[in-house]
Length: 321
Ligand code: BTN
Image: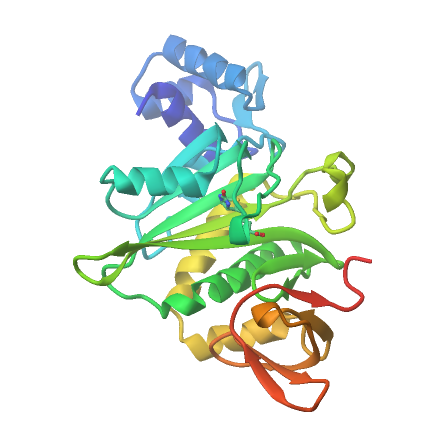
């Protein structure tokens, strides 16, 4: 690891706490000159480092660059090992993940980007991904089966809600199947993709893509998204939220399905709502009466019949008005 990464690691682990040049030099077994150079390089990258004569340096709470050092620090208690790759700009973190796996990349890894130029949404849609948001793909090895594949997206939605609740004190809700809303506006979308091993006939890797509208001015979003998209300003830095989400995802995937799905139901805003949906191009209306442990909606149609919906888009009456 380059010296500047070592310095960043020490400062990240002790945010808001001074370290003198001398202490850093002795801790990292390098010269004070090397520490000074490393600090300058970190500042040039955009880290907010406070330097005070006779006290030393600290990483300010406002310093909000995405870094692998910062993210890994929040993953020390995770029971899976991850490599963390941070990018300033990518087309799509899911696309990059698929490319790396295709090139033979092994193990679990996370790609996080500050910006995407061609973010992917569900069903071929795009996902608007301007600078300074959180766009991440968690890539998990599925050689050893850790959960029922059809529950991965729902368990991820619960993980995101719980990360935002615990770090930010907000109460987001889930709009079936995988949108996260805050005060009725979409703040997060999830796109889960699988890489199948045809020779072995099983799922090899899963790529869980999560896009969060943080620290954005929604007024700058494209017109067609403005009545639908929401966002929030982070109290914590982005690294902490990325780690917490990844930690929660791993824990939820390994937890009992019924337990996580009970929480999915608790966070869902769709129960009891009138919906319109289009299975096989029919236009149907009904009221959602339940969500089962597979994450399917149980809908009572206008003619009284019950229908089980496992996928697709639904419009909720009164939402995004
Ligand atoms: C949706 O709401 O339709 C799903 C959006 C998923 C967006 C995330 S951002 C990180 C990852 N990379 C992508 O290209 N898409 C997902």
